[in-house]
Image 1 (cartoon, rainbow, N blue to C red):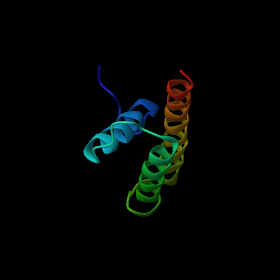
Image 2 (spheres, one colour; image 1 turned 30 degrees about the vertical axis):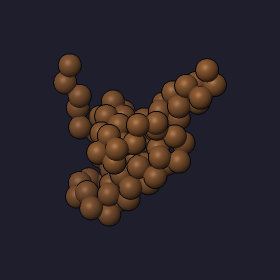
Image 3 (cartoon, rainbow, N blue to C red; image 1 turned 135 degrees about the horizontal axis):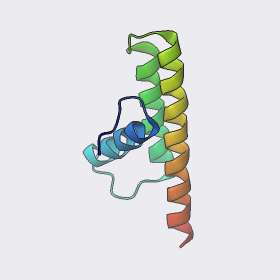
Length: 78
């Protein structure tokens, strides 16, 4: 399955990849927040594109982090 740049799934993979590169085995709320902040900062300051695309990417990044927060919360509740 191909994941399109900027989609919710793309950002989920980016967050999970960043966690793996940081040798984070147990993804916590703090880890997700830290990675989210870094990716958001990159989109706001380093990514050159139309503003419409930037807004869409930021929205999708937020949705991806919310999905991972929910997964993290359900994993800790078990």
